[in-house]
Amino acid sequence: MAADSIFLGASRKPDDSYQQAESLLLKFGNRHGLITGATGTGKTVTLQVLAEGFSQAGVPVFCADIKGDLSGISAKGEDKDFLVKRAAEVKLDPYEHSASPVIFWDIFGEQGHPIRATISEMGPLLLSRLMNLTDAQEGVLNIAFKIADEDGLLLLDMKDLQSLLVNVAERADELSAKYGNITKPSVGAIQRSLLVLEQQGGTKFFGEPALKISDIMRTGTDGRGVVSVLAADKLMTNPRLYSTFLLWLLSELFEQLPEVGDPDKPRLVFFFDEAHLLFNEAPKALLTRVEQVVRLIRSKGVGVYFISQNPLDVPETVLSQLGNRLQHALRAYTPREQNAVKTAADTFRPNPDFNTFQAITNLATGEALVSTLADKGVPSMVQRTLIRPPSGRIGPLSSDERQRLINASPVAGQYDEMIDRESAYELLQKKAEQAKTEAEAAKQTDEADSTSGWTLPDILGGGKPGPRGGQLRGRQTVAEAAMKSVVRSVGNSLGRALVRGILGSLSRK
Image 1: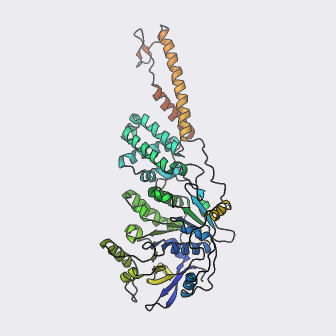
Image 2 (image 1 turned 180 degrees about the vertical axis):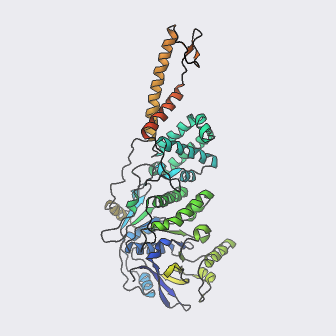
Image 3 (image 1 turned 60 degrees about the horizontal axis):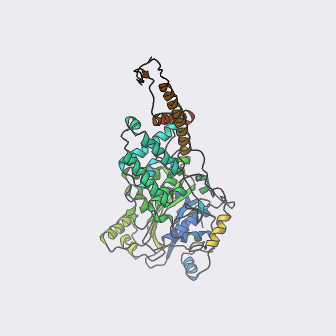
């Protein structure tokens, strides 16, 4: 097979005989793609074939394993009658079995290495989506992040954000005058959402050590790209966390990687399975930013491939940017399904040999309509294609097989233990206690002065009446003294605004 392309399978003539090999050119691998089709039509195998192809070409891959089946990519396949027959039909000769180099990841740390992000890196926009906040609550959260950035407060884990929200609630009147209305009910609602997120596993995801992007962009000693597989079967019980996490990761790639233009092959390929979860009920502002990231990340050498059942799951503004398309069978029983088939058919460059609309409804399992970008970036004419069999195992690994690979992983031990270094929670606690001690000492001094029977002259004015009609110096409340001490102290030591990127995540350039 050609070294500059990935062999996908073979297109068929109207009489179902072999026509020609169908491939995806590596130089257009960063022009994004779409894999769609109904359940059971072969999308997972197609994803595996693409992931193996990119890995073989030296391109790192990141993908989510929704059902556990994709883990088989890390094991050598076996000769089975239907696989051997498929290989012969597409003229794949020799048909060789091989295992791809894989690193397993898991937000919960059960089926792979723990994968984490900090609160600061996630940013207010994505956190608001994750917690399903209202516009008013999102506004308060943005103010909280603004204050943390200005005061240099590191937000690493959930207790950091919780302590910051307590701080904001106590200073609500003061901050409202500067940033806009901050109500305690809004802060309370955010805190309740944080509690729900904590119960759903947020404490395991938010913290350090945070994922290094370089660890999902590895190549092996043999030159093959490492496939990072995210265990997502348990994660899918919280679809909002799943989609927000993948969007954060996409945002991190966009913010951290330099511009490379159009390389000979992608620097990384990112598969976004169950893509409808990203776009369902997403606010317009978020959709606009997702569109920007998808459009611009291509020049960073990253290809994004969306996988979903229905092409209508992806907004038109994003759909128009997906150059490589593999369409498995769709059913057309209801009006919406018929509309989906029509939408899918209309996105392909027509082939005079068959009716695209009818072909989509008649495809067999393992068949797909394929159109990739050809020379000069022009979409190829759509072809009814029999997808080649994968080189790795079709089906999941056993628990023992998975554990052996985790133990032998190049990142083994790097993410296992969570680190809790000094951040917003510790700083706010320390400064508040210090300010409280100072305020109590001042109060005792004032009480001693007042019981002595003497008062100081009111030189500057503005004090409170003393016991003999004089004026005591103006005093702050304990809370006011504590808060001002915190802001002054933290601001002096760390006072710099952090820079945030297109999706509100912390930019670490």
